[in-house]
Image 1 (cartoon, rainbow, N blue to C red):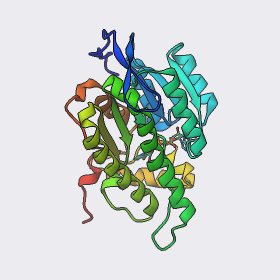
Image 2 (tube, helix red, strand yellow; image 1 turned 135 degrees about the vertical axis):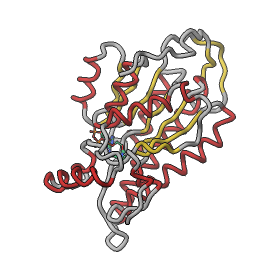
Image 3 (cartoon, protein in one colour; image 1 turned 90 degrees about the vertical axis):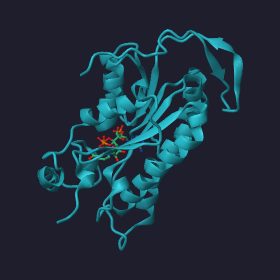
Length: 281
Ligand SMILES: NC(=O)c1ccc[n+]([C@@H]2O[C@H](COP(=O)([O-])OP(=O)(O)OC[C@H]3O[C@@H](n4cnc5c(N)ncnc54)[C@H](OP(=O)(O)O)[C@@H]3O)[C@@H](O)[C@H]2O)c1
C-alpha cells in the first residue's frame, strides 16, 4: 500500500456549514481536521478494500453494510476512526435514515463511494421484473439518492463521488441482462451528475471493474464449481491474464476520490485488465 497521501485541506480550519435540507448553506465556520469518506458495501469485496484504503490513507470512514459483525471488526482494526451504520439499502426508509444520520452528524464529506451492489443472472427472454427492480434499486437508485442526500456535505468539502460500476456498464454481455442495464444507468448517472455538479466543485466519477474475486457472483446464485470455472476463464477473457483483486479497484477509487484527480470528472475508468478492449474472434 502506498504511503499516506497528505490531504490538501488537512489544515483548513473553516468550512461552510451546510443546511440539512440541502438548500443553501450558512451559519458561520466549523473546524475540521480530518477528511471523511462514506463508503457503502464496506463489509465485503471492493467496498471493504476501499474502506481499508481510505483508513490507511488517513481518512475517517463512515462504513455501511448489512453485516454488523464485519463492520465491528473493521472498527476494531481502526479504533476511533470508523463510524458504523448497519443498513439494508434496498429499503428506502433505511436509506433515508442513513442520509439523515450522516447529515445530522457531519458538516462536510470529502468522498462518497457507492460500492454496495448486487448481480443477478437473467436474459431478456427470461427477465423477471422483481429481479430487474432489485438491481436497479441497489445499483442505481440507492447511489443516486445517496449522492443527492449528501450534496450539501459534499459541497462543503468540495468533495468527490466514486460509483462502482462495471465493464458490464460499457459492454454488452449475455446472461446478465438486468445487471448490464443497471451498470449502464449508473455510468450515465455519473456523467450527468458530473456535469451538473462541476460548478459546485463536486467531482463525480466511476470505476468499471472486470472480474474481481469477491462474493458477488456466488451471492448472485453462481454455484462454487461454476464460479471456479468462471475465474479460470477470466484468465483468457482478461488480456492481462487473470481476474483482479479488490485492492486493485480500491487503489483506482482512492485516486478518483482524492485530490490526486482534482481535474477529473465524469469519467468511467476501466479497471479490468484490458477486458473492455477485447472483441470476440
Ligand atoms: N466482483 C466483480 O467481479 C465486480 C465486477 C464489476 C463490478 N463489481 C461491482 O462492485 C461492487 C461491489 O461488489 P463486490 O464484488 O465487492 O461484491 P460483494 O463482495 O458481494 O460485496 C457487495 C457489498 O454490497 C453490500 N450490499 C449488498 N446488498 C446490500 C443491501 N441490500 N444493503 C446494503 N448493502 C448491500 C454487501 O453488504 P453486506 O455483505 O453487509 O450485505 C457488500 O458489502 C458492486 O456494485 C458490483 O456490481 C463487481
